Structure formats: structure tokens, C-alpha cells
Image 1 (spheres, one colour):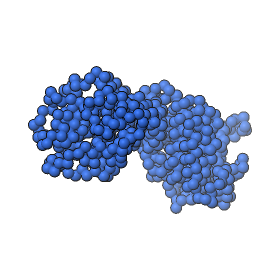
Image 2 (cartoon, rainbow, N blue to C red):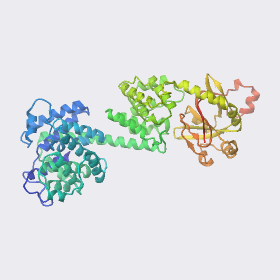
Image 3 (cartoon, rainbow, N blue to C red):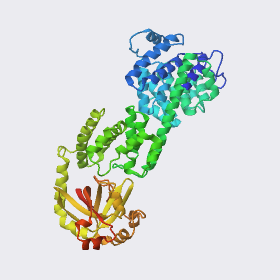
Image 4 (cartoon, one colour):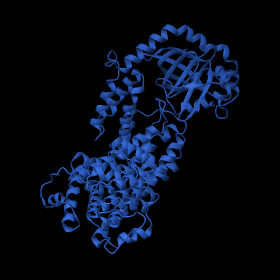
Length: 608
């Protein structure tokens, strides 16, 4: 914002001179260098934004009231005739201007918000209260976009390319070409691209302003626009800042000082968010979503949904962290450092153990405002991205959403609309089916057709693969049973408590079984029986590659085989009281008992 004020002050003595000034020869500050309407309206926009609390309608009204308040007080600041008439009116109607007043005052918008989308939205809002002509709106949005991109790390080429493509301005000319054929104008169509070109050719803040002033015409506004972009790209030295401060009256300096405090607070918040993001990104490194994208894109999207709904910083950090304790080995103390005690508590509430009842889980989530809103945003994003999943997964997810998430306060309409949109991506012949019907029909028919083959292969050994967070393991098992239990297709497998797989199964609720060619299992048997997945990467040692399952978190072994995806239905430990002393002694003399896992077969299929 200060770049716009300085540009206004520096350019003010040279406005509408008959001949352009020489860019390297004119003094930056003269006795008659002073602020004009550009500065007054820029500070009016800043004042409105600080009190608008990012509420669109509230901010729109404040734009009007603050422009009129400061405009009427500084009535001799050099406004155009039509704007002066608007200042004196009582109604809120704009006057369809395409003058550059909308672009000269827009810089505070580019600093207030943290996304280009939001910046362009509020830039349009700041323009249309007076300059409702499409060219007036376009000019404000283009300048605001350039400032935002400059302050968030974009290079000059990226800024040029975006403005040309998005707003259609010709930025290919040079300052010398413009000076050779000057078009003295105060319209956005002329001044906005010229001001941006002055920035694009600059080497520092001062050179950007000098080049803008050298173009002649509406020099204070050209320099205000070029200076506002250059400030974001280069920053401004203290000597220049002091020259601006000593030319501003006390009431305008109050706004400048308040703005600096707001920006300082936002800078700290952005720093906290950036550090939290880096930690989440590090913890999710190597993890992928079902669609193949990096896993960090999901928590980042959840945080962005919360930001767009204007939730505070701690909600957004909780969005970044919401599943860290579920799928990584993140440290609770680190979560507390980045987000505070409330964020840690919310993340813990959102972490669901395998044995937690869903009704109890949702009750806990709703008891905490941060957890509730983050889980709602999580569900919104998952509903959006679930279009890449199998139709059977969609059925299950839709059914779960309708049962548990339709009444999340403040999210009802969005969750319902996302659910309905996802449902429309399911083939029409399956759309009205229930998850239980689909699972049982597919599971039982597949199971009965392959039962003899399954039992034969189980006896020779099959891969049992598990996953908890970023950790995964596989082992060879040969004890188990398959059949119908509790009205469902079930497999029963046994894992001793000493095994690494047992540890992973204690933290998850599913696994997969891969019925591979038994002739290739000799080495796998030896590795599985002698070495632990805690100390050895069995997949690497055996040359095994995994790929995502259709439904389960645990992957399958990527090999031509029959695969079961299994969701644990019931688990129990072998107890000496339920077994004869002789048998118990034979199998469990060291008390390393098996846990029996009864798991529903949620899908059965073959891969080539």
C-alpha cells in the first residue's frame, strides 16, 4: 500500500505536463510533492478492509462510506468531476466509470487476502461501488493480481503472462515505445498496462516509479500503480518511507499505522501457517491419494476450504494436521508447537481408533468446534475427489455421509450438494443400491465360486498385507478359514502377538490377502519366518511391488493373483481356558498366542 502512496506523492508535480520528463533526471521529491486523491482513496479502501472482517456485504458498504468520509474531508485532493459528484450523493449507485481511479486505490486488497481468487473477488468489489464499467473493474483486478503475485514469489515473466492471458492487456511494448507515441489518458485501458510495463522493466522500486512518471499524463496515478506492484516485488527503503510519512496529515497516518499493525499480525499468521504446512508435508512425504496425487494436497485443500469460509488460523492448521495421528508417526508435541493445545486436542478427537464406535466418534467430533468444522471440510473435499473411485466405494461413502454428516451445523447444504453430485457419477443401474447388498452379493458369489481353490492355496501359504499410516508389512500365512459367518462372507486368519503384522493390525481395521503362485513362495517363507518387518523391508528384499486396493487402506501385492480385501469384523485372543492343556502347551509353550481376526471379505477379484 505504501508503494501506491509514494508513487502518488512522487508523481504529483508532473501530472499532465506537455512533455514527458526524463526518467533519470527529475527529482523524486520537490517542495510541491504532495499526496492526492490516489492516496486518500487508497487509505479509504484500507480502512474499510480492516473493519470489513472479510465479510463481502459489510465491506462493500464500508468501501462506500469510507470513500465518502475521507473524500469529503479532503475535498481538494484532485478528484475527477464525476467522482466528486458521487462523493456528494447519498445513494449507493455506481456511475459506470472506466477511469483509472479503481486501479489506483486497489493495492490494500492485494495484501489483505491470501489467495489470488479472493484478491480478485474483493478487487472487483472495491471497483464496482463506483467504477462499474467492465474496463474499470478489469483494471482494478489486474493491478491487484499483479501485486499479489509479486508479493507471493511470482517472477516478472509469470506476472506478465498471467495478466496478458487473464485480462487481455498488451504488455509487449517497451517504455521507449510508449514514450514515442504517448496517449494521454486517465482510463484503465491505457494507464493500467503502461503502469504494469513500467514495473516489468524496472530494477528496483525507484526505477519503477521513475519509468511510470516518465510516461507523462496522469503521472501520479501511473506511479501509484507501478509503485504498488514494485513495493510487493522489491520492498521500500526507510528513507523513502520517511519522505511519505512526513507529507501525510495525522489522521491519515493513523490509518497507515493501524494498517502496519494488521499486516504485521497477518505476516506472523502466515509464518505460522507456512511452518505448519512444511511439517505436514514432511510427515506425509511419499504418501499418495487414491487418485495418485501427493497426499498433502488433501489436508492443504481442507485448510483452504476453511480459509474460504473465514475460519481462524487455528482451524486452518487443524485442517493441515487433521489426520497426522491417523496415517503418520507425527509427534503430539510438534503438533502442539505449531498449532497450540486446542489444535492438538481437536486432532486427537479426529483420530479414530479401529475399535471406536462411529456414533461415539461423531459425538466426540461434534463436541469440539475445531474438530467438527475440520471434519466437515474434510468430508466436503473427499466427496469432491471421490469421483475417481469405484462405484461401489462411492455407494459406501454416500451412505456413510448421509447417515453421519448431513446434520453438521453450517455445512448441511454444501455436504448435501456434494453428496448428490457424487451420486450422479455412479452408473444409473447401481445408483439406488445399498452398500450391504452390493458387498454381500459380490462377496458371497465370488467366495462360493472359488472356495475350493482358496482353501488349497491357503494351505500352501498366502500373503497377508497390512498398513497403518505410512507403515506397511506383509507376511506369509497358511492357517485360516473361509466361509459365511454373521451373514457375511468371512475369512479368519491368525497372527501371533510377537509379529510386526500384529502391531499394525492393532492400529488398523483392514488387511488384504494375495493368493499368489505357491511355487514362488520359498524365499518369501524364509524371510517371513526369520525376519521382522520392523527391521527389514520385506517388499524390497523380496522384490514385491504393492498397489492400492479398491476399498482397503492396506495395499495388495501387484502380481497376477487372486486378491481378497478384508475388513475386520471381530478379533479375539487365544485363551488357555478354551483349549486343552496339552494342545495349548504344544502351540503356545512360550505364551506367544495368536489373535484370531474374523474379517468380512469386502471384495474378491483377480489381476493379470
